[in-house]
Length: 119
Image 1: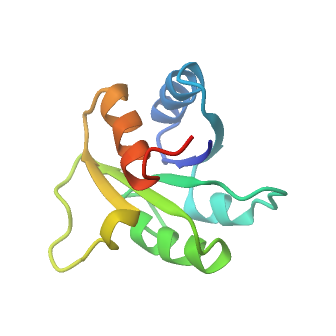
Image 2: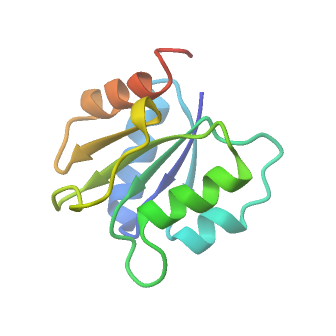
């Protein structure tokens, strides 16, 4: 399964890369929404794993919306050290939210929950 992981903290990206590859995922990294959407991918990601707060520019919710225009079947796992924003409604079973800090096992469960457990 292909994951596009987006976070503006390089330490978080490095940790998630190592942990998710150990779990058997193919992982692509981006440090911003702009970087993520600038990727020309031969095969689209199955799941976008994104922080809500990506620093300057687009946030994770905006990124997910833009990414879904490009890849309509994309599933999304949001992560944040802040609570889920009031007034923002997730897209049913296609999205989930993980509060930071979380264990890698919780992220793996989140990925499987939005993909229906498919590999």
